[in-house]
Amino acid sequence: MTRLATARLVLRPHAISDEALYCAFWGAAVRPIEGVASIAPLDPELAFARLLRFIGHWSVFGFGPFVVEELATGRIVGEVGFAHMRRGNGADFDGVPEAMWKIDGQLTGKGVATEAVAAATGWFDESGISQRTVCMIDALNTPSLAIAARFGFRPFRETLFRNNPVRLFERIV
Image 1 (cartoon, rainbow, N blue to C red):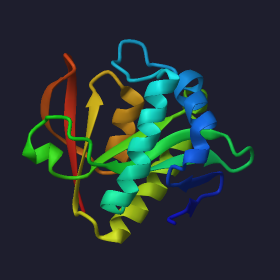
Image 2 (cartoon, rainbow, N blue to C red):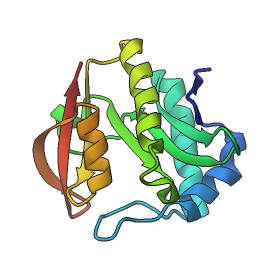
Image 3 (cartoon, helix red, strand yellow):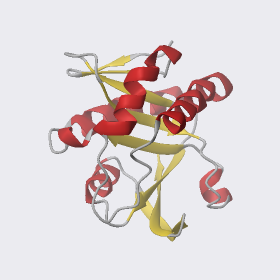
Image 4 (cartoon, helix red, strand yellow):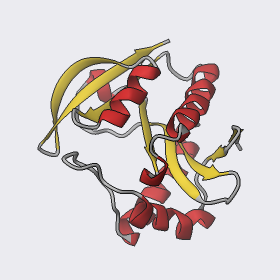
C-alpha cells in the first residue's frame, strides 16, 4: 500500500474503515468558498459513494487520490491526488489523470495544501504513470489557482462544468 508521510501529514489510499471520518470531513469540515461552485458539503450517502469510488480507483488504475490525515490527531483533513474523473471535458482533458486537492477550510493559509500536493505530486511524478496531468478550477477559487500555479499547472482552456465557468489547466513533466 502506498503511504506518504510529511512533517505534519500522512497521505494514504482510502479504506472502508475511513467511512465515519471521511463522511465527517465531507459533511462538516469542508466549507465552500463564497461564489465558487463546490461539491461540498456532501451528505453521508454521497460521501460514502465517493469513498467507494476512490477505493476502487486504486484497484483499477494503480493510483488515485489520497486521504490526508493530520499526523498529530489522525483526523482526516483532506483529499489530494490524481484520478480519472470522466467529466466530459474532451479527450485532451478526460484522457489523462486529473489532479485534485481539497483541504479542510480551517487549515487555509497554513501550508497544509502545499505540503499535501507536494507529496502527492512528487509520488505521482516518480511513478511514471503519466507525463501530463490536468486540473479544473473555478476561476474565483484563488487558493486553488495559487496551488495550481505553484506546481506548474498552466491554463489551456475555459469551459463550463455543471453550468459554472471553470478553467482547465495542464502540467507536463
